[in-house]
Amino acid sequence: MRRQIVDAGFCRASLEENERGVSRIAFWESAGGSSKPAGLAARLKKYFDSDNVDFSAVKLDLGDATKFQRKVFAITRKIPYGETRTYGWIARKLKTSPRAVGQALKKNPVPVIIPCHRVVSSEGVGGYSGGLDLKVKLLKLEGALE
Image (tube, rainbow, N blue to C red):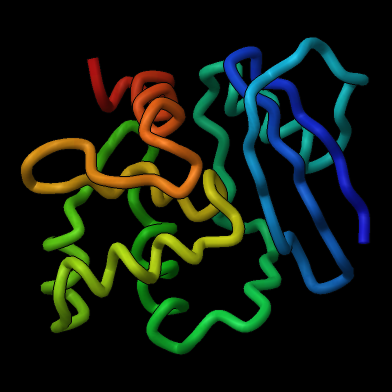
């Protein structure tokens, strides 16, 4: 397994990759600079610098994700940069409930690559495993929220 740290200024991200693909991205508050990232970490850094980076070809290792979670992730992964969809929109596509979609997204091991921050509630921003402050910052970074 290879791990790299990306400093986004407003947060830091730990990127974990193995031979099957990206297996995890975790966020925490930033505490200063890090060394210059390479490869996928460099692309993630470009994203954090407000660049529209295409992650669609990134190979993923979703581990023990269920078949349902994988369906939710596949739909979510197709949401374009700077746009949002509601939990209900995804739920209608899968003939399930918005709550089930939210529970699946809560298990997303690779946020940003599977852009679950782009899924919002019909009445507001909704939840986010990385915290609402980070979700709002990511949506603002993409211009999807003012």
